[in-house]
Length: 133
Image: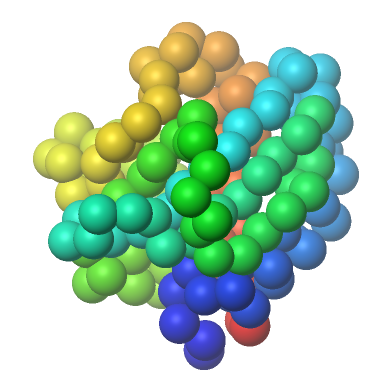
């Protein structure tokens, strides 16, 4: 497997994202737009970037310095563990609660108050386990 959050990894993630029509439909209905950075706790900037407009991943690759709406960080070992074991709501909540997954920017509590976004968020994380770039 290619390095997590590499250019190839992020592009494959975006391809899988855009193939997930139910998730896109819900994100479009919720008017979800976001610039999301993914990275590691020990680095000053995120490694990967996903730009979502009206639910569709429009750009994916290495982080390019732009302003983020979301900045999600964890250790490389934690990302690998989650990508191997998968994500579900309890695993995600525990990861955030124990700060293994840190939200350096973004309002995850707002999403948790909107059940349709929770489902889409879980699906977006689950798609990460399917990346084979």
